[in-house]
Length: 532
Ligand code: DHE
Image (cartoon, rainbow, N blue to C red; front, side, top):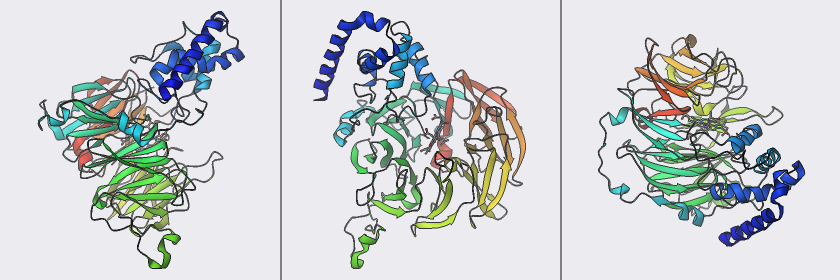
């Protein structure tokens, strides 16, 4: 059916082009705008899909392009993207046609593209024989001190030996990976999620992709269960969560909607709450948090909705792999947990008028909000870290608005301190074995080149490290906390290794915009200094 539609569209394009080639050369703006769909079919559809849902190239949907400025889109169409298969079209298309195409890809596809369970299953591919490879690294290094570095510049992943700081292997990734890769508990496999909905399972020991599947058309992130048996994807488009087994075979999708089915929602994110044997999912458009248990002995679900408690009648839905809802006052964009996963700390981003930002603490056992979090601006709780301070445990969170780190006492949920930084930042990191928490100011045009080190005992900034004029961000520590690795976040960027005690640079590896790096040991042991 879809193939027939594509053939018809192509035939229409051929007729149109045959009729009007000369006209298209000198296309005026309105004419170019009218021709945009045809230009797309002729020049773009083979790689980006007839429905713009992506194929060899990424999806070109408004949801996928939210972060690409129109001027950048025009530049990419004209000049291509270095080190990718995206060619430039400046010699084939007029400036007006490039403008029209760039404007058109930001328009919604009508009817909205669908991605069914059948589509998900049909998208799955596996590497023959990969599932049977020996359980032993084919390289010599400590597999627990391995770093997985995502290079966003040319969409590659580098594996770095965390003792010698040498690249063991480098391979092409899906377009625009986002969020932290997730590891199986033994550290052998890593799962990557792309904004276009692809999940890739990679065998770090045998250096091969094991399987891939497309969970959605526009995805937020993925989580892997603490027992390594399940993978869950949070989608914006379609509005679903998708559950897979560890081989990336679809188990089911769950529509992200209210219990009565009247309101659907994009999914903000999913995280694994290993001590609870469950996934925790937050919705972006409806004020609900879901907990989906992967404990086969999970209790039946009492859904929390008044109408579910009819005369105390038990609900037949088993808890295993089904959502248990907590209803809030506000939907959550960004969230984080205490180390025991009893509490979820969530933030609602401000609306377009700047109003409506809030942060709250939700107790996942009693399933309701237990405190408001006194953080103004735009806390980036997902990047927060926890550490012991003054006989209590505190949360320290970057704030995307204003240069400050908010520190909150996790017993009282009261603010302890606001630590000034040179500008708003995105990420924060520490390690049990280091006295400092490292944070960036990458959202600041003037201070994006500065990392600030905060003493975890005094909660005061004690040092800065600079990479003048470049963006310096996203730190991760070696397994023993002795070295901190940071990114020079540029196309001709680098991974810089600092001695975490002397703060001296130890080594520099050239990399293409290394957006994030992840240490196997810190991840699988859920170090308090890193993201989970
Ligand atoms: Fe991220 C993690 C949401 C923009 C780079 N980002 C996450 C996670 C969420 C999130 C929910 C946690 C997922 C996980 O690890 O499983 N990010 C958002 C947004 O809502 C936001 C602000 C807007 C958006 O367009 O999605 C956003 N993020 C960005 C960027 O612009 C960044 C800087 C560049 C990029 O590549 O997209 C970016 N986000 C990252 C990185 C992580 C991440 C590197 C993993 C951090 C980690 O260390 O675990």
